[in-house]
Image 1 (tube, rainbow, N blue to C red):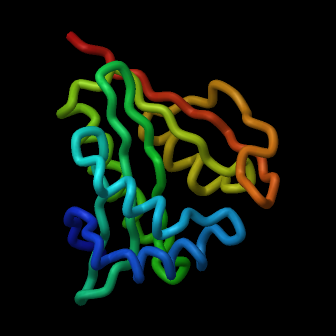
Image 2 (image 1 turned 180 degrees about the vertical axis):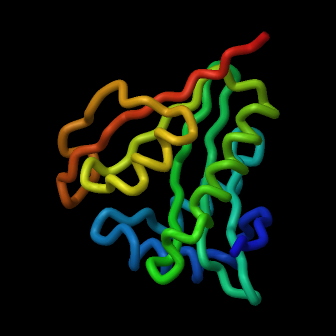
Length: 151
């Protein structure tokens, strides 16, 4: 089953913050961080996945001229494995392609093998590790990269 995707709005932040807590505690972003991200419309692209009026996932892209970064992707635990994360990632990659970003980078928790596998299926390869990247937990991050070959 697929969710409908739409741009994230400030009014989505309570639902997004609930998912942040569910998925990423203690390494959560704050509502202030999201408000700041949503205000930067020139280089940011944030989406929510919605079903029945309920936010079940969200994702964000930071895109500059020379590279883009998948900033975040989260899907409620009850809906993981249903393709919503892939749907969100595909939308972010389409936006990166639309902006003609030659490279897309991301960090993913070293202990999140399911997410790493999704990224590998979308053409990402591990290029390094960041020790203790996620704070305050101190969890390592796997750095992954996807290059876009232009014809």
